[in-house]
Each structure stands twice: as C-alpha cells, then as structure tokens.
Image: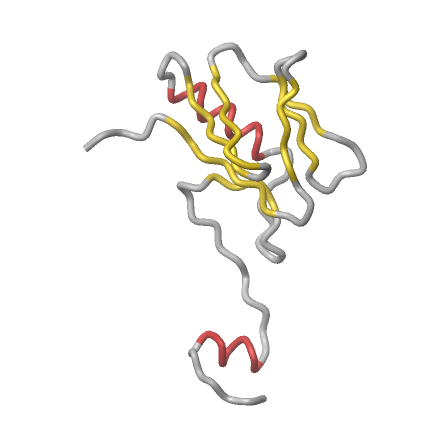
Length: 116
C-alpha cells in the first residue's frame, strides 16, 4: 500500500477561487471577503492548482509536519461553516453539516417521500 504524499484542499463557496501569482510566489484567494487574501508559499512546498477551487499541496522534502502546518494556515483563511457548508476543506477529512430542524428535515432524514 502506498502512502499519499499530498493533500487536496477544496474551496466551497459561490464565486470562490484561488490563483497563483508567480512574481511573488504566492496564492491569491478570493473567498467572500471585500479584499483578496494573499498567502506566501514556502520554498519546501509545491502547489498544483487542479481547478479554480481545488489545490494539491505537496511537500518537496517529504516533511509531513510542514505540509500539515501549511494546509492548516490555508484553512484558517476561511474556516468551515457547519451551517452553510462554506469554507476551505481538506478532502481527506469528513466535514459535516448541522441539519435544520423541522418536519421536512426529519422526513428527508428518514428518506420518506411524503408531501408536507
């Protein structure tokens, strides 16, 4: 069995994206704030942007500590919101939502097809 050498990070939100600025070696996040958030990339970290909302983060030296710290700093830009489902998420972790209360949510939970 092979170990995963990278971490996938996804941005969940309408209009959210990330771009790479090659002149300053930084990531530019647009995550719902009135300003752009810039995050400098350390020399030991390699980033591959798979899409506008999906990043692949890899450590060049294989340091899991450095990799985890950098991904944690990215997630601190916009933490996961358990009510709306917006935020920056690691793909290898399960992030849940709190279900709203009421008759409809109970019927959806029980998978019943009843008109309310």
